[in-house]
Image (cartoon, rainbow, N blue to C red):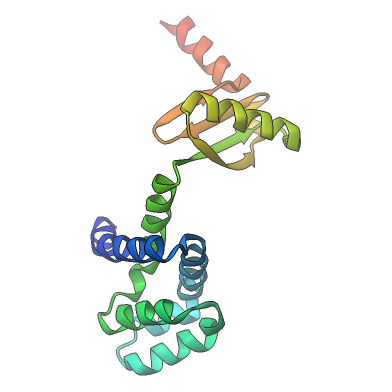
Length: 178
């Protein structure tokens, strides 16, 4: 998969520069996300690798599915990727683009796992505390895992904050074993 990321990086950087220059960062996020979803569908994905499907036909198929969501630059990107046989790396382009966008906007991605569903005010307070701690805007993806027993586990970048009951029990068990 490292090869796909390597191939995708120059495309993502070029798209980011284009989007930044035109002030359309969010629009490009949407376009890349939509087309990535489309090409990951099994029926479309099977067509991409099929040597019997000419690139013109593949372009027609992709555009017929998501043409209304693409602007002219988006259509040019998809055409370029199809011509260069790189359409399958679009999900990686989208992922790298989102990373560049987040860096530009100073946004950190946080994975918050809670033992119970968080109320909106609890989530807002938690995000606020994280923003102060990390001195960046935080975008949270929240999930529930009852295996935590209680508390939350937060992953931001390479940092993990585990204040879950199960995490504390594991730490105590490790201490008792040593």
